[in-house]
Amino acid sequence: MLNSPHQSRLRIGRHSIAGQVYHVTIVTRDRIAFFADLRNARTTVLTLRAASDLGDAETLAYVLMPEHLHWLMMLGPHRPLHRVVHAFKSVSAHRVGQPVWQRSFHDHALRSDEDCVVAARYIIANPVRRGLVERVGDYPHWDAVWL
Image 1 (cartoon, helix red, strand yellow):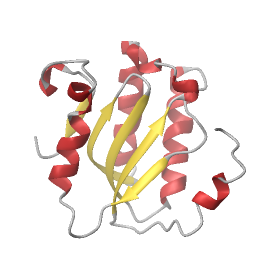
Image 2: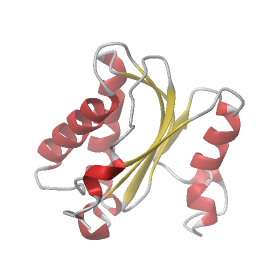
Image 3: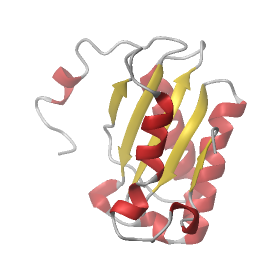
């Protein structure tokens, strides 16, 4: 649903808090497996790392699946969450050379009682749960600061 009439209501109450840890999920356009292509995947991972280098977000963990991205990040002080995600999506699509992402994204702010390491393990185990690999270490497109 790219242009859902209720999409704007999803943003009501969305706040960006610098220093807050967010689990962001971004899905590819029409769920096309753009990142089954190694070049597209590596280009996108480099773009994700650049967001950290710019201070927009500190990447704590990520897994780039064939048709979506899970990104655990701590928001930096300069831009709100929706701008950071939009910039990442825009730059990665430009570098890949084609429109890649759906317009929207899902985010979840981790509450103070939630454990970031547990969330990171959940994120990076995604390829195992999907049956793409038998062990996390066998999947090439993930990273976590704790591992």
